[in-house]
Amino acid sequence: MSQQRANRPKGPAGEQYHIGLKPKDVARRILLVGDPARAAAIAKRFDSIRPGFPKTHREFVTFTGIWKGLDVTVMATGMGPDNTEIAVVELLRCVETPDIIRVGTCGALRADMKPGDLVITTGAVRLENTTAAFVEPGFPAVANHEVVLALSSAAASCGHRHHVGLTATAPGFYGWQGRDHEVLKGRFSELPKQLADQGVLNLEMEASSLLVLAHLLGCRAGAVCAVFANRATDVFLEAGQRAKAESHAIDVGLGALQFLARMDKERGKAPRWVIAPSP
Ligand code: R1P
Ligand code: URA
Image (cartoon, rainbow, N blue to C red; front, top):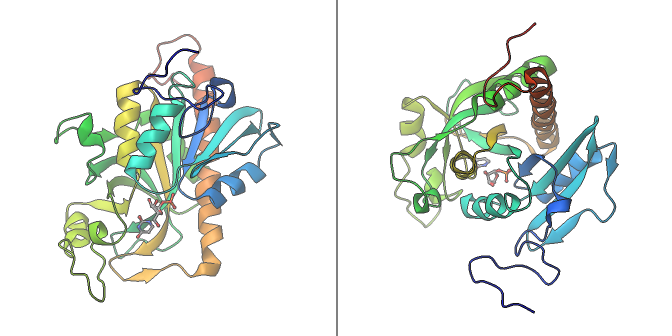
């Protein structure tokens, strides 16, 4: 048996080291979520789940199946930009140029954004340093324009209240999102307001990592998040209302995959990244 390389470790059956998947396990259309329960909720909507799924390794939980005729993979990554980096790197070793959409939750920064609303990310402020290993400090984390269009079209056709704009991706939930604490005095208590003053809509913990890596690897990516917190008014969505908000984000994430599939079909052999004119 050949010696494994430290750069590209694999599991005992040749699967990716952390996500536990092989190329045959991953569809070209991928949804990433933080919470494993959300991955299961998405898979529940599939017409069929492939035998052998879910596949679980460490905190990564994956379902691949068919939804409305599309092969779809949904993976729970757990929380944070570093987990997202591992997921994206290893997924891209399984499948070439996938479409990847994050379906997450977030804290809204403006008082007029209601808990339960959705936020579609056009770009993300890189408060994390995971992506600093790949690009310089001023490098933008931009969502693919076709994915933004697909997500906003899906949100409009579902009739879900949504906002489209900038996100900030933090490497933590408490200190880096300026949350106060009984004992710990954070350094960033003003950050949510500063970001809001700069027109940033929401704070979460994965988008910029996904967007930068997807850009570098040449695949389309974007994010839609359900608003669980409003940081301006200091309210958090009641436990009983969270499933509905997540379900709206799932409607939009899945709906966007369908829009992208339709765009690709209309485009035919025209170059990728260019949206075909409507007939
Ligand atoms: C924090 O509660 C977690 O929720 C958000 C944040 O980005 C972070 O991962 O997203 P998910 O609900 O997708 O995990
Ligand atoms: N997820 C976050 O990262 N922040 C919030 O405020 C809510 C959900």
